[in-house]
Length: 172
Image 1 (cartoon, rainbow, N blue to C red):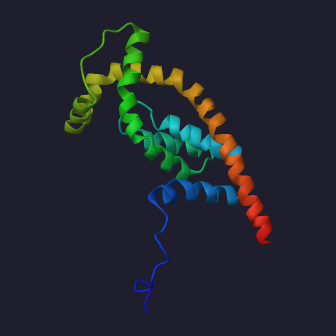
Image 2 (image 1 turned 180 degrees about the vertical axis):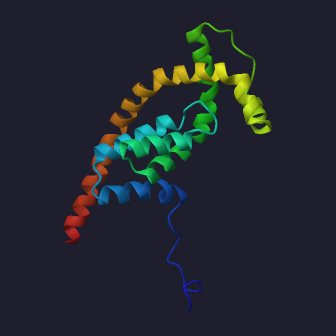
Image 3 (image 1 turned 30 degrees about the vertical axis):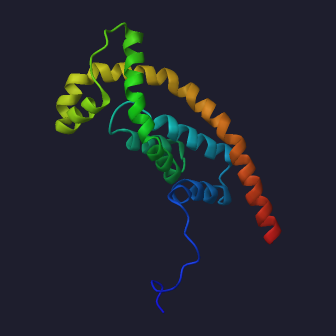
């Protein structure tokens, strides 16, 4: 019987487990501290909502590389943020318009996506100042959000690390 024909024992891990839970568990068993992993998750979440379409993966990669953070965990949580990223683009732009006292420009997320897909360079020329306003608002929110996310995630990671450590000690 080949591996492909071998019976499987129950369903495998879910997509959530494969892409998020297992990589985090793996990092905790490989010696990464819960503190560093909490920062990795917090920064990935915050960078994952950076209000410029098409930039979050590279921004996560560069920040992760510069700070020596785990790239699979960064990119996994960045991907998880995609729906929130789309929803918050308009929020950050409106906040930025308010910060700069600029009149709101009429548009919607579907319209933005369509214009971006049609011609990214034209989109950048038309919405460059608007994008800067959104980035400015994001820059005000991001540091606070990263700290709050880290504070929320750290106890969970510490408990998970303790459980993993206890299981490992019991198996030895």
